[in-house]
Image (cartoon, rainbow, N blue to C red; front, side, top):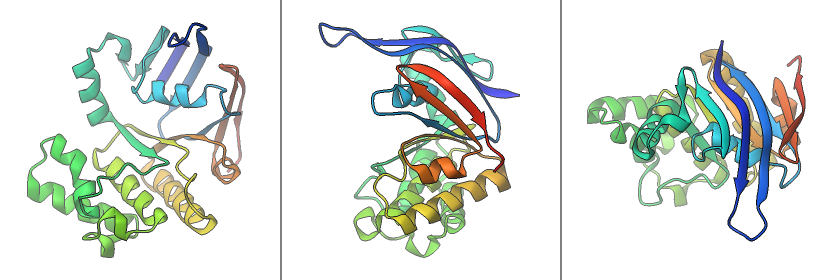
Length: 229
């Protein structure tokens, strides 16, 4: 069953005198438990597509269904609330709050969801232990390595119990060892918990672990391949 269905999506940006056609008729379905990489050269439209899948942007034309919800029918407030409860995000810049500890950063989404303090703290501790940095729960981002910060970001993304997690170039700022460890962690979570991961990436190491590779160029899907991994 598809949890995401993109139907004939176009995206045009009109900020300049010459419109930029970022997406040109995208059709795509993603099912529960997939580990999918969206790849393509710079300017191909992959980040735009990821932003639309994540409800961070809306199409100029076409429909984006998350299960039975069409995102274009939601108000701005409803869309914010929908993202909060349904979608997890991991970005290349980590996007942690620098004055908060790893525990507090992991709790943050649950606090917005109004989860009681004791419950969210217990869950955040379990998540940090799951991603392998339970002993760093009282450290602030500036006291953590890049790989450790990205693990906190993964824990935070999982905290909302999302339908899926989107990851925009999550390995771009990591060294090889941290990249391998992060990808192993994500694949294990994908296998163990059937967490759906969708990446936009240039990183061959991400592609090597993906079970599906969707290649986009000039705003169109040019190939969609299942792997045997």
